[in-house]
Amino acid sequence: MIAWLNFAALLLSALLFWYFYVKSVGPAALEQIIGPAAYRRCGLYRTIAIIFELIAAGTYVVYYFYPLPLPLPTQFAWGWPVSIAIALIIGVPSLWLMVKGMLDAGMEAAFPSKEHTLYGGIYDKMRHPQAVGEVFLWWVIAFLLNSPHLVLISFIWLPIFYHMCVAEERDLVLRYGRPYIEYQQRTGFLWPKLSVS
Image (tube, rainbow, N blue to C red; front, side, top):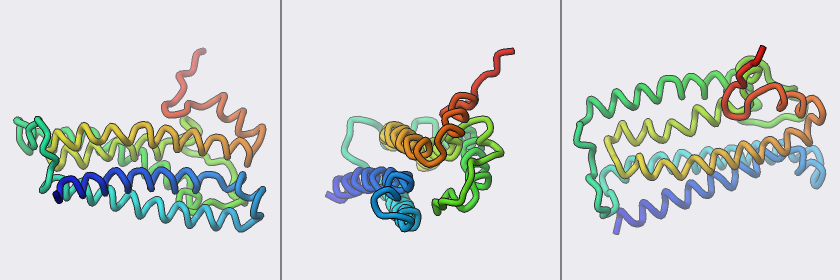
């Protein structure tokens, strides 16, 4: 019973994270409806989204103790040291990418601001480094918990993060106009563009 309740909590928190994060990346569209308060409201949505994301991470830990009764082993045959090594191989570059993106975005990473300009730094190479880094951290948690179940469940985050990036792009075009469209043309969406000389 606990396993199914926890799994339902995982799915619900993932969906609510998705919903509120998508709402948080639409300040320019919302501003057309409610005015300047839209940016503050989107900051609140972002905070709520982060809370649901943390709840989802907590359900991963609970899932380790109460896995669903699936016809899969509950732990990898190779044991913890290999799983920890895999987690580090995935986690170090993912965490670096996420943190670098957050630092280069500044306060905009958590609190949208009308005064904020287009980002620099890693954003000169790719448009969504935070999302690319963050999405793979779910596999890091799964491997640290040595759980094949959680490795499979982590695939739900791919469409969630992809859709969040697409939703954010729509609002950024509305917010910045032509400069953002030109930025889209010269940088990669989720991966740096290869320059052809």
